[in-house]
Image (tube, rainbow, N blue to C red):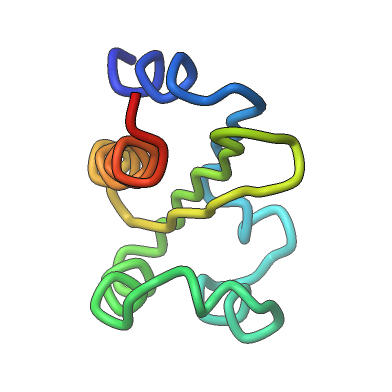
Length: 94
């Protein structure tokens, strides 16, 4: 929870966390990515591991305004939060 709390504090606007949303639509991870533009937000290595584990973590966050956002996908929650925090700290240094 510490990493999620840190990300929330770093962002001036919303932070959403989705876990295995593909299952809500009876889809595989691969099907979820095939039907969307989300592929630009994930590396092939991470996507392959997400498919293998059937786990999809999405962190969707708005660091500065309610218009500009980032999405991070991963199979591991801690790694996804680490990546999101890194993006905010790099793009919007305090």
